[in-house]
Length: 430
Ligand code: ASP
Ligand code: MG
Image 1 (cartoon, rainbow, N blue to C red):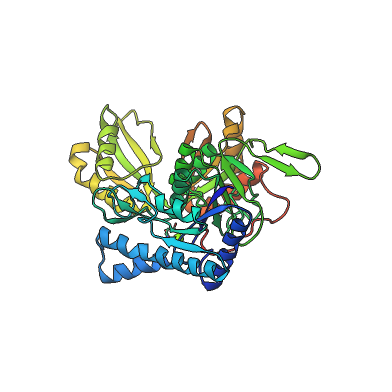
Image 2: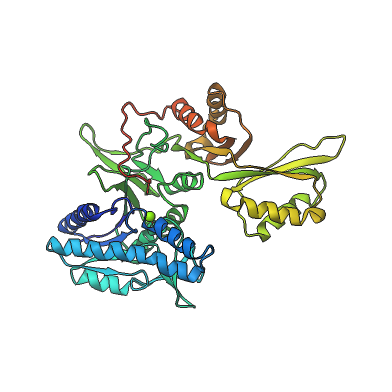
């Protein structure tokens, strides 16, 4: 008998109908002879609504209380789901994150899981129950306060439980049929990926692909837990994310190994802004003091580019990208240290977008970068910044150019599917 951990996102359990549909799927997995642990998110937009409510009461709600409030969302869905399963004639028990043994650090609103002690879950499934666990929440080891793992954190709960329970697979049910070669909301000809390595999936997640959270994939890679991303609205096979390629059964050839693609996909991200520090003296230590200032403000940056300095002035510009939500903080911090750092002025631009091409195959295939730039040129898209890793090329462009650029690159690398197979069943992509 196998043990399966399944996770259902908010759009899959958005209303009573959704909860009943999910209950049926869970029962099917049980009837197929598995022990089943199901992790749920809050119904639909509940988490957003709770945040709105908190902000109406207090513009800067206390982290501890906000966590207490938000965890209520998952309590609602877990209890309703357990009721729906019982109605189908099966035994189910729901558990909060803390009851399920999800132990975190003490950081409110974005806690990290440091241990999982799933004793109660183990007992519950051994007794024949289906265990339903509230995603996205845990309890701090030292303060004993309730914490949340950051937006979209239920995926991480599911993978962490799968690792602790030594599950055979972690199934992530969402409102699309799997991981696509591009966001199906932008590229209707995006193709579903059958298998993708942890490495490529991590790069896609880091580059703006929203289907799986970076932290969740990181966790899965560390404990080598295969993830199966699939739709809760269809019965189709989804995307396998694992260390080794999967073996697929085909009608003609019997079994065949899915091959590593040259390019896994194109990701985009319009959540970042660009800061340019203008007129920086071109001497040692300048970049260090700029980025020390940014780091001290607890801001994570993404790309960095330094221009060639003008010979006549000995001054240069340094640009970097960061989450839009940290823009204000970064500008304030730099302005405050203007005298210490020594620069002329700051420019802030939040109308940028990032497009990334990801694939382990580019390590060994010359010409990928050239083809990428050619596709952008043909689409008339101007490139502002470039950065690369071994298996990724990213560029920053105008935000308005992003959809066109993504489609152009997707076509140029032969990723377009013959049919419009990319179906978006829910609303939010989670
Ligand atoms: N309900 C939480 C959120 O909306 C956690 C999750 O959906 O994974 O962010
Ligand atoms: Mg959610």
